[in-house]
Image 1 (spheres, rainbow, N blue to C red):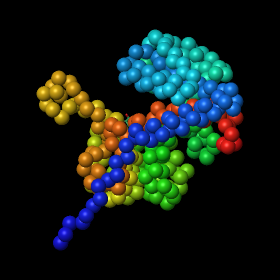
Image 2: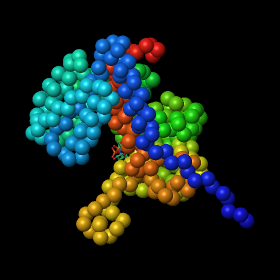
Image 3: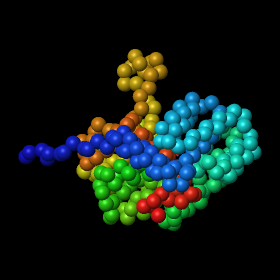
Image 4: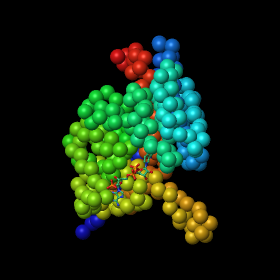
Length: 306
Ligand code: NAP
């Protein structure tokens, strides 16, 4: 008997999508400036000296400026008090040149991030993390959606077009990723299952899915035999593990992998995102898109979008 012929998976690289979003945003920023005299503004707040956070924040600032927007980065010392941080958020809420506010997480442990996030004006909540934003998303209201799930939806719509009736499984239920992802898929008329660390028989649950979104933070947990042949697999995980080369690993060198065992999964899936180079690249592009959306909602839409 001949072995079944399987097509190799389409690799959904994030770069062209991120470039297209950034280019589209830049054009609309110029239109907003020309039509309304408004420059969308994004304020990013960084507390402390976490090196990874500092890199993310610098990149956000650079990309905001490159899109023609106003960018402000507020760098506060690690010992900043809750009251001072909340007062800064209050000032940014009131600032007319700021349309988006992002507080870089994680915050130092003495600060209560939930209380800080609760202070952000939901109309400027470009990370989509306030209770109001989550409620608007859950009830079909007009709100701002967390950036990474938004990026995942852009990739999924490109890979599949209409998502109506697809069986979608979201692995992970965090407020930042799993829950908003599930809400977006539900809003796109998928039949959605959310799985987590207490779910039973994850491989069987995953094998039912036409769309599998993995956001667990467990290196290469999703194996090829968890995947329905032809499914679209979106890997959100960013996990740092020791280098493959034992000598480099001994020197502490690492590499980044996703939540999906990419090489074997690509033999079964119809389309799959790589890590690195997949959805991670869309996150900042979607942050710019959200800042533009917030600016348009606050100041009025650009012509043709009313
Ligand atoms: P998180 O807050 O730690 O949530 C992880 C979720 O995965 C939880 O719901 C947890 O279940 C579930 N989980 C953990 N271990 C599991 C297991 N063995 N089996 C089944 N479910 C399990 O993480 P997150 O913020 O959602 O992020 C998830 C991953 O995405 C991380 O690798 C993160 O770095 C990455 N990420 C990437 C981007 C990007 O820009 N690409 C953005 C955000 C996050 P319980 O709720 O039961 O504990």
